[in-house]
Image (tube, rainbow, N blue to C red):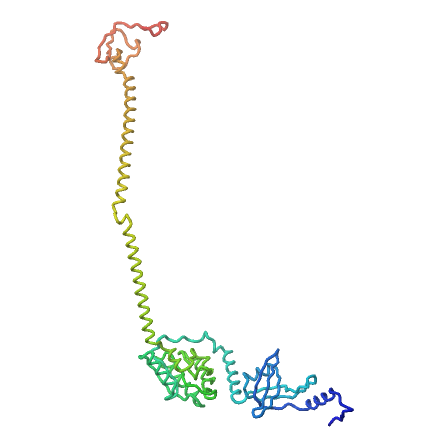
Length: 411
């Protein structure tokens, strides 16, 4: 209902704003489609600008981060379907839309589904780096799953044989896009997994759209690769293409050519490394020999090795000097002992009975040969012997004359 107003009787602005808000609030929520041209996150709220896909018409839309996260990855330029309700802000006179639900359409919807699958598989630990198996240095046989007569097959085989001419490859052709591709790739994977000589498997195809690469994001194929005991290399598309298979494979190659480079070594590079290693070994041995030769030369230059008897000469001189000192010491000791012995002998001789006899004394013995020391030990007419210095006398005792005690020692 129109409000009456004139220049003389204008309506207050608040009344008009209230009326507009009332009209807008009576509008219910509606599903709209448009393209996201701006997207900003601020403190738990998402603000985006939604533009019509065929006309220059844009509106501002706000939503909670929960609504956006539930929708999956939504980037600028994506086409979406939004359930919005118009809202009028009286203070600024601005019309905006509040979004209660957001759903990507077309490729965006497909990406959202893939993102949900990624999160599920990641939560199960299928993307963990710890479960990835290392590739053998030089596999006996390589399994290759690819499209028949495809550029990916030519690139892989050409670079494999260029890098290592003796390499053996077991090639299995499958569809690489379309509804039947996933099952064929899984069957080929099972055959190569059971092959006794295959030590690494390459799954390769060229680039393409998200829809073209969908078979390599299939949950069944991804789980089959995760359960595979043989290391698997994913070589799908180009550098920017990242199907889910890349995340679960043991090695992700940016291109089929890169897969060939990562699976086998370059024979020329390996020969160069061997040559360099041999050169380093020879150099190390040469340096070691030179170092030991120099050490031997220095050892031979020592005086003890230059003249081995030099040390013996020194010790011989020391031994001779010690022997001479020992002889002198022994001679001095013998002289000293001889001098002492002569002195003792002189004293003994001076005190011996012979010396006494030589001074005119005699030793008297009875017939039994016992020494007579007193006149009381003989009787008159006894025969006694007198031992002199030069012989013995046989005497007969005529009488005895004992000394009186008063007479003393004088005869």
